[in-house]
Length: 112
Image 1 (cartoon, rainbow, N blue to C red):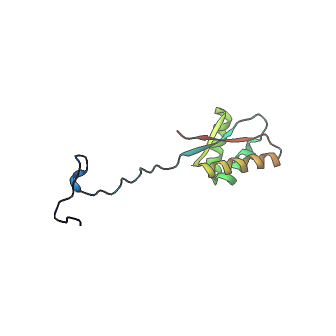
Image 2 (cartoon, one colour):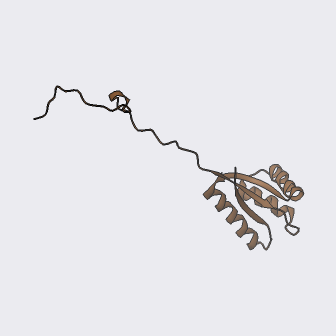
Image 3 (cartoon, one colour):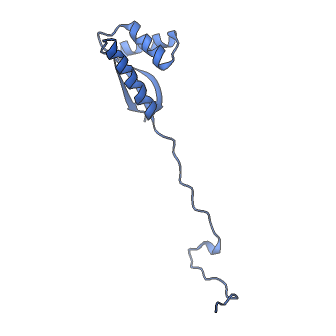
């Protein structure tokens, strides 16, 4: 038979009988990735502006600024996205450039 009058026994590390909910795991936002266009000596500047407008929804002015940055600095940032979106955009740009017979290259790098 069980003795119901005896208090429960706790060890020293048991928080003195207080039940605590388990700690929620610390959630972190997913890492972001940069989509970059790389400069080359053969792709026309107008084509680069068209790609920035069509694939990255930039205005003509913003696309022109980015195109000049690509031309002068060797690469330019098109946007920062989640991994899947960044890889999809880069793949679409590279495929479109090949279809139009331009050597334009788009790459993805982790944003640290």
